[in-house]
Amino acid sequence: EVQLVQSGAEVKKPGESLKISCKGSGYSFSNNWIAWVRQMPGKGLEWMGIIYPSDSNIRYSPSFQGQVTISADKSISTAYLQWGSLKASDTAMYFCARHGDWEPLRNWGQGTLVTVSS
Amino acid sequence: DIQMTQSPSTLSASVGDRVTITCRASQSISSWLAWYQQKPGKAPKLLIDKASSLESGVPSRFSGSGSGTDFTLTISSLQPDDFATYYCQQYSGYYHSFGQGTKLEIK
Image (tube, rainbow over all chains, first blue to last red; front, top):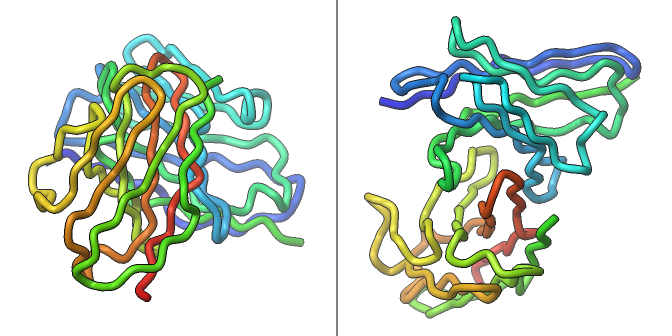
């Protein structure tokens, strides 16, 4: 069974750094893309970017380029999303999801709620 | 980047109604179009990929059609479990994008 398990909810202050994780199991982690998707409170889904763990090929949405960093450690089947300096506007639910080449997002993590507040 | 425009933003309907949601891409995406259902507090669930292929386990009252730039999701006879928010997503190439969502409400 394919599973994506994300790290737990975080409460941070503006200016702090953060790295959240997404651990895959039940499939070939290295040879599938992991996407990150943001959902701000009461809003829609926003595609942030993707990583191919096998060769760390990374693509960012122009809206998120320079705002976040996507990475992966294929040795532990885990992808990451990180911020160097959080803003209140980063408050959102963040989902990871798996897909193959030319495939939609078939499997999703449960989401990580990030709250940024002074 | 490819923009996806969904309509309507909100749809009020009754159990048993037939409803249609539309999604338009800013450029041709062939059939690289998926539909998702999301309920409050949950991750989205894939319903349809390649514009019209129903995922395993998804009820046959859901159907998708279209190609190029114009797509539709149809629910033939609404059931209580179908009241949720629906998103289209294009996955043509590396850079994907979602429509803004359609909230399906009980009338």
